[in-house]
Image 1 (cartoon, rainbow, N blue to C red):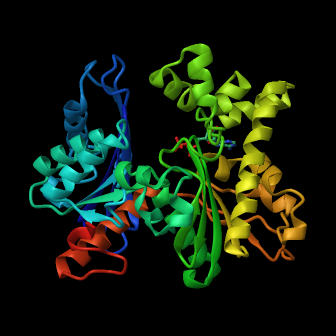
Image 2: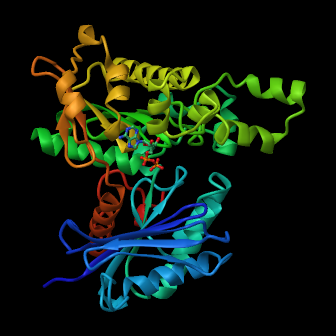
Image 3: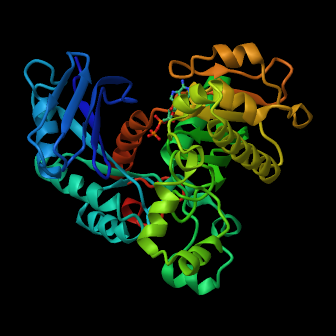
Length: 423
Ligand code: ADP
């Protein structure tokens, strides 16, 4: 039996998620996943689910990332539930890293230079890159000599043309301060576009795809021949769609207005835009779409309005990307809301028959989007509409294995500037 395992690590601002995949082909078999939540708080907790069993345990309070990492290592080799017998079964580690700036255009084998660059890019993603760097440092100590690869949320969007990534600011703000649109959720958009192409048995090079990743964070991406040509998130993940607590697109002049009229400072504005806005702010109730749908059904007007704003925003981006691509062969819905909400899917694409998009009500209502790829367009719809479960960890595991092989063989794939993808 080949029990070589690829470990995927996703370090968030107060959580550490991990997943294990067995095999060295396409990392098909997930053997365990888990997460440690509320790192640094009094109620720190580990939840582990795996083929050999599941456990939930409270951890000593107020510990930091180092302790969370140690707890993960312990559970991975736990004699009862651990997915591996010993640490030397780990053949590669893939790290999700939020921001690769315009330095990283593909998954990249980590060395001291790459780690330093990820730390430097913390200026662009202060809540994310520093914790990823910390997890990478610990992982390099825990798995010496094992190939470790950084997979960036932004890398898939490095194919955006300047027309898509430039803001209407004086050019030196881009040149000197790197203020431009980067885009996020790249691993998910790439994953669902590849799955759509496999499912339809059509080469990805021939497809124009609009991918709607609708979760707590949400973004839409226009994908032409497998390459991202535009996406709704920008310099930060706050731009674009309405999200759980992020406001998405807003007239930028609102900010100086609030600074002058309410005396708000940068931190207060940041909180307003990223944690107090979105579905939560508009509904005054919750950021959770399932709860909002229930509230709207029970007659809560603001909940219904928030859902309406959410769907309209997605619809506007779908329309914009249809125009950019010139056509769409496939529209994909993914992530919690995209996979789970028939209501959001139906409202987003209702009445678009004139654009070749015809939803089949029954298929949409019956789609089991968390389990399998489902077609929700009708037979007579020129555009195929799919619900595709996203599986970012598996994609990271695959990218880790393929990227590792490329680097070990000394081969470079297309679009790569310099060793290890460093431009
Ligand atoms: P994250 O971006 O944190 O990974 P998810 O992709 O899990 O988030 O999406 C979470 C969102 O998906 C929540 O708003 C949740 O209510 C929503 N969601 C999950 N299942 C359903 C469902 N069956 N119907 C409607 N919304 C759902």
